[in-house]
Image (cartoon, rainbow, N blue to C red; front, side, top):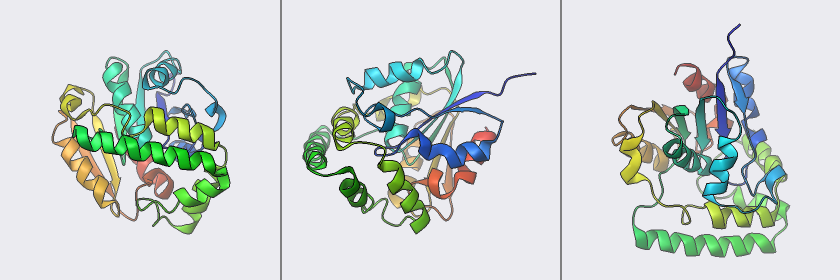
Length: 241
Protein backbone atom coordinates (compact mmCIF):
# COMPACT_ATOMS: atom_id res chain seq x y z
CA UNK A 1 0.00 0.00 0.00
CA UNK A 2 1.26 3.45 -0.87
CA UNK A 3 2.31 5.52 2.13
CA UNK A 4 0.53 8.78 2.86
CA UNK A 5 2.58 11.86 1.96
CA UNK A 6 4.38 13.78 4.68
CA UNK A 7 3.23 17.19 5.89
CA UNK A 8 5.41 19.28 8.20
CA UNK A 9 3.48 21.94 10.14
CA UNK A 10 5.29 24.84 11.83
CA UNK A 11 3.56 26.71 14.65
CA UNK A 12 3.64 30.42 15.42
CA UNK A 13 5.44 32.38 18.12
CA UNK A 14 4.34 31.30 21.64
CA UNK A 15 2.54 28.20 20.32
CA UNK A 16 3.71 24.58 20.13
CA UNK A 17 3.44 21.69 17.72
CA UNK A 18 0.42 20.50 19.70
CA UNK A 19 -1.54 23.53 18.46
CA UNK A 20 -1.89 21.75 15.10
CA UNK A 21 -3.89 18.86 16.58
CA UNK A 22 -7.29 20.06 15.22
CA UNK A 23 -5.80 20.20 11.71
CA UNK A 24 -4.12 16.81 12.13
CA UNK A 25 -7.43 15.30 13.18
CA UNK A 26 -9.17 16.84 10.17
CA UNK A 27 -6.53 15.39 7.85
CA UNK A 28 -7.09 11.87 9.15
CA UNK A 29 -4.83 9.30 7.52
CA UNK A 30 -4.37 11.22 4.30
CA UNK A 31 -1.14 12.83 5.49
CA UNK A 32 1.56 11.76 7.90
CA UNK A 33 1.74 14.96 9.90
CA UNK A 34 4.92 16.06 11.68
CA UNK A 35 4.40 18.93 14.14
CA UNK A 36 7.72 19.87 15.78
CA UNK A 37 8.23 22.32 18.61
CA UNK A 38 10.40 25.07 17.14
CA UNK A 39 13.47 26.00 19.18
CA UNK A 40 12.58 28.22 22.13
CA UNK A 41 9.12 26.66 22.47
CA UNK A 42 7.58 23.90 24.61
CA UNK A 43 9.77 20.76 24.57
CA UNK A 44 12.52 22.70 22.78
CA UNK A 45 12.41 25.70 25.11
CA UNK A 46 16.04 25.18 26.14
CA UNK A 47 17.42 24.26 22.70
CA UNK A 48 20.48 26.25 21.71
CA UNK A 49 21.41 28.08 19.57
CA UNK A 50 18.13 29.60 18.41
CA UNK A 51 19.07 30.64 14.91
CA UNK A 52 17.40 30.30 11.52
CA UNK A 53 20.18 27.99 10.38
CA UNK A 54 19.67 25.67 13.34
CA UNK A 55 15.90 25.57 12.84
CA UNK A 56 16.30 24.78 9.13
CA UNK A 57 18.65 21.93 10.08
CA UNK A 58 16.07 20.63 12.57
CA UNK A 59 13.36 20.62 9.91
CA UNK A 60 15.63 19.01 7.35
CA UNK A 61 16.25 16.14 9.77
CA UNK A 62 12.55 15.45 10.46
CA UNK A 63 12.06 13.26 7.39
CA UNK A 64 14.06 11.89 4.49
CA UNK A 65 11.08 12.23 2.18
CA UNK A 66 9.88 15.18 0.17
CA UNK A 67 7.13 16.97 2.07
CA UNK A 68 4.37 19.53 2.04
CA UNK A 69 5.32 22.42 4.32
CA UNK A 70 2.78 24.47 6.23
CA UNK A 71 3.54 27.40 8.53
CA UNK A 72 1.50 29.81 10.61
CA UNK A 73 2.61 33.39 11.38
CA UNK A 74 6.24 33.18 12.56
CA UNK A 75 6.21 29.55 11.45
CA UNK A 76 5.08 30.73 8.02
CA UNK A 77 8.01 33.11 7.75
CA UNK A 78 10.34 30.27 8.75
CA UNK A 79 8.62 28.00 6.22
CA UNK A 80 9.44 30.49 3.46
CA UNK A 81 13.13 30.31 4.40
CA UNK A 82 12.99 26.50 4.49
CA UNK A 83 11.31 26.33 1.06
CA UNK A 84 14.01 28.54 -0.43
CA UNK A 85 16.76 26.52 1.27
CA UNK A 86 15.28 23.12 0.25
CA UNK A 87 13.54 23.73 -3.08
CA UNK A 88 13.97 20.11 -4.21
CA UNK A 89 12.36 18.70 -1.07
CA UNK A 90 9.42 21.01 -0.40
CA UNK A 91 6.70 19.79 -2.75
CA UNK A 92 4.15 22.39 -1.76
CA UNK A 93 3.95 25.38 0.56
CA UNK A 94 0.90 26.44 2.56
CA UNK A 95 1.24 29.69 4.51
CA UNK A 96 -1.26 30.96 7.09
CA UNK A 97 -1.16 34.59 8.19
CA UNK A 98 2.44 34.84 7.07
CA UNK A 99 4.78 37.58 5.91
CA UNK A 100 8.12 37.53 4.04
CA UNK A 101 9.46 40.04 6.55
CA UNK A 102 10.09 43.79 6.59
CA UNK A 103 11.66 45.10 3.39
CA UNK A 104 12.62 48.57 4.64
CA UNK A 105 15.92 48.45 6.54
CA UNK A 106 15.07 51.28 8.93
CA UNK A 107 11.72 49.67 9.77
CA UNK A 108 13.46 46.35 10.32
CA UNK A 109 15.95 47.94 12.71
CA UNK A 110 13.10 49.59 14.61
CA UNK A 111 11.26 46.26 14.82
CA UNK A 112 14.40 44.52 16.10
CA UNK A 113 14.71 47.11 18.88
CA UNK A 114 11.00 46.71 19.71
CA UNK A 115 11.42 42.92 19.78
CA UNK A 116 14.34 43.29 22.17
CA UNK A 117 12.26 45.42 24.52
CA UNK A 118 9.50 42.82 24.36
CA UNK A 119 11.99 40.01 25.02
CA UNK A 120 13.23 41.84 28.11
CA UNK A 121 9.65 42.24 29.31
CA UNK A 122 8.90 38.55 28.72
CA UNK A 123 11.86 37.63 30.93
CA UNK A 124 10.37 39.66 33.80
CA UNK A 125 7.02 37.86 33.69
CA UNK A 126 5.79 34.40 34.56
CA UNK A 127 4.62 32.29 31.64
CA UNK A 128 1.03 32.67 32.87
CA UNK A 129 1.32 36.46 32.93
CA UNK A 130 2.83 36.64 29.47
CA UNK A 131 0.35 34.15 28.01
CA UNK A 132 -2.52 36.37 29.18
CA UNK A 133 -0.80 39.51 27.92
CA UNK A 134 0.03 38.04 24.52
CA UNK A 135 -3.60 37.04 23.98
CA UNK A 136 -4.44 40.77 23.89
CA UNK A 137 -2.14 41.43 20.93
CA UNK A 138 -4.39 43.22 18.40
CA UNK A 139 -4.09 40.56 15.72
CA UNK A 140 -5.19 37.87 18.22
CA UNK A 141 -7.60 39.74 20.47
CA UNK A 142 -10.73 38.95 18.45
CA UNK A 143 -10.35 35.16 18.71
CA UNK A 144 -13.46 33.32 19.99
CA UNK A 145 -13.26 32.49 23.72
CA UNK A 146 -12.78 28.75 23.17
CA UNK A 147 -9.93 29.36 20.72
CA UNK A 148 -8.32 31.94 23.02
CA UNK A 149 -8.47 29.52 25.95
CA UNK A 150 -6.91 26.68 23.95
CA UNK A 151 -4.12 28.99 22.78
CA UNK A 152 -3.53 30.18 26.35
CA UNK A 153 -3.18 26.60 27.61
CA UNK A 154 -0.80 25.79 24.77
CA UNK A 155 1.45 28.74 25.64
CA UNK A 156 1.88 27.44 29.19
CA UNK A 157 4.08 24.63 27.84
CA UNK A 158 6.80 27.17 27.03
CA UNK A 159 9.04 29.28 29.27
CA UNK A 160 9.65 33.05 29.36
CA UNK A 161 13.35 32.47 28.76
CA UNK A 162 12.73 30.27 25.74
CA UNK A 163 10.20 32.63 24.16
CA UNK A 164 12.45 35.64 24.70
CA UNK A 165 15.31 33.80 23.01
CA UNK A 166 13.04 32.76 20.12
CA UNK A 167 11.98 36.37 19.62
CA UNK A 168 15.59 37.51 19.52
CA UNK A 169 16.69 34.77 17.15
CA UNK A 170 13.66 34.26 14.91
CA UNK A 171 11.58 37.44 15.20
CA UNK A 172 10.51 39.65 12.33
CA UNK A 173 13.33 42.08 13.02
CA UNK A 174 15.94 39.34 13.22
CA UNK A 175 15.34 37.51 9.94
CA UNK A 176 16.21 38.93 6.52
CA UNK A 177 13.25 39.88 4.32
CA UNK A 178 12.34 37.60 1.42
CA UNK A 179 10.21 39.85 -0.81
CA UNK A 180 12.85 39.89 -3.55
CA UNK A 181 13.16 36.08 -3.47
CA UNK A 182 9.48 35.13 -3.73
CA UNK A 183 9.87 34.65 -7.48
CA UNK A 184 12.25 31.75 -6.77
CA UNK A 185 9.45 29.63 -5.30
CA UNK A 186 8.69 27.12 -8.03
CA UNK A 187 6.45 24.85 -5.97
CA UNK A 188 2.70 25.50 -5.67
CA UNK A 189 2.03 28.01 -2.89
CA UNK A 190 -1.29 28.49 -1.08
CA UNK A 191 -1.71 31.64 1.01
CA UNK A 192 -4.42 31.46 3.67
CA UNK A 193 -5.68 34.41 5.69
CA UNK A 194 -8.71 34.91 7.88
CA UNK A 195 -11.35 37.31 6.61
CA UNK A 196 -11.15 39.37 9.82
CA UNK A 197 -7.35 39.60 9.54
CA UNK A 198 -7.21 42.54 7.13
CA UNK A 199 -3.45 43.11 7.48
CA UNK A 200 -2.60 39.58 6.39
CA UNK A 201 -5.25 39.32 3.70
CA UNK A 202 -3.52 42.26 2.05
CA UNK A 203 -0.10 40.69 2.58
CA UNK A 204 -1.30 37.40 1.09
CA UNK A 205 -2.44 39.13 -2.10
CA UNK A 206 0.77 41.16 -2.32
CA UNK A 207 2.85 37.99 -1.93
CA UNK A 208 0.79 36.06 -4.47
CA UNK A 209 1.52 38.70 -7.11
CA UNK A 210 5.22 37.82 -6.82
CA UNK A 211 5.03 34.01 -6.62
CA UNK A 212 4.89 32.12 -9.95
CA UNK A 213 2.34 29.50 -8.85
CA UNK A 214 0.26 30.94 -6.00
CA UNK A 215 -3.34 31.03 -4.89
CA UNK A 216 -4.93 33.10 -2.15
CA UNK A 217 -7.72 31.72 0.04
CA UNK A 218 -9.54 34.11 2.35
CA UNK A 219 -11.21 32.04 5.07
CA UNK A 220 -14.61 33.29 6.31
CA UNK A 221 -15.36 33.45 10.03
CA UNK A 222 -11.70 33.55 11.00
CA UNK A 223 -9.08 35.93 12.31
CA UNK A 224 -5.30 35.53 12.29
CA UNK A 225 -5.09 32.00 13.73
CA UNK A 226 -6.97 30.22 10.94
CA UNK A 227 -5.64 26.79 11.96
CA UNK A 228 -7.26 27.23 15.39
CA UNK A 229 -10.50 28.89 14.31
CA UNK A 230 -11.07 26.98 11.07
CA UNK A 231 -8.93 23.82 11.07
CA UNK A 232 -11.31 22.37 8.49
CA UNK A 233 -10.34 25.09 6.01
CA UNK A 234 -6.63 24.42 6.53
CA UNK A 235 -7.14 20.68 6.09
CA UNK A 236 -9.18 21.30 2.94
CA UNK A 237 -6.43 23.48 1.48
CA UNK A 238 -3.89 20.74 2.17
CA UNK A 239 -6.05 17.98 0.75
CA UNK A 240 -6.97 19.84 -2.41
CA UNK A 241 -3.37 20.54 -3.36
